[in-house]
Length: 266
Ligand SMILES: Nc1ncnc2c1ncn2[C@@H]1O[C@H](COP(=O)(O)OP(=O)(O)OP(=O)(O)O)[C@@H](O)[C@H]1O
Ligand SMILES: [Mg+2]
Image (cartoon, rainbow, N blue to C red):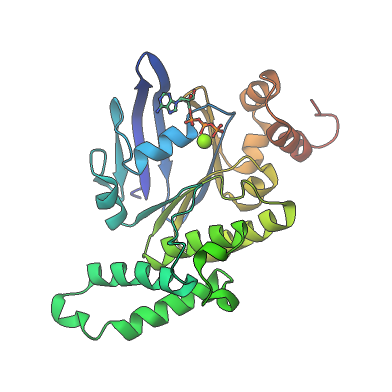
């Protein structure tokens, strides 16, 4: 099967600092894949390379078998890859609904021939309405996006990616800055709305990762040290050694030990 997203031998350095040392990843279509690893491992750097925000020093990136390595971010987005930023990409002064309409309209324009476009506005509205509902913001459609709570803005951000027709989503720490209830809600939203799409997610909240991911890859100091099911990752000696050895924050080691059961505690 052709992977939805494949990364081959990606290297990246900033000046003398080597950040990624030959990263390989293959995400199957429809898979929810989590990328975890300590702070500074290179996770966001890898996302940035995939989304076209920077170019790798070596390696190749394919989206459904077509190379995207040297394409501009907009060209990659047009091919159906959406990246959610931690700073949200919403238009603060537009209503929530209009933010979704904009995204839906752009997606529709890409799909349609010019002679079809004049009849497109109803389907754009319907699509935006459907996404509004899917991300749980029906009651907030007419308020200015800038007045949403932080968690709601993240939901809208996800909605913009969905309305834009993305089939592959990169989410970098989608629950960062949320309390536990908000984070649990966000994970449920992501689960519900990404069914049938491909998801690559960076997340430090191990409850979220183990609840959502089909497979997990572990990036440590610019290298993938393990890829596997949540159960396999929990049991992986190299992963445990890397986490328990480097004084990493409680989220990861706590989550791993927690999942590992009693007696495995750090
Ligand atoms: N533009 C840049 N110039 C120089 N160094 C950079 C640049 N971007 C990232 N780095 C360095 O690359 C390394 C990896 O950073 P990155 O943000 O990818 O880590 P991360 O795994 O996302 O960490 P976190 O979990 O804290 O978000 C860090 O040492 C960082 O300082
Ligand atoms: Mg990061």
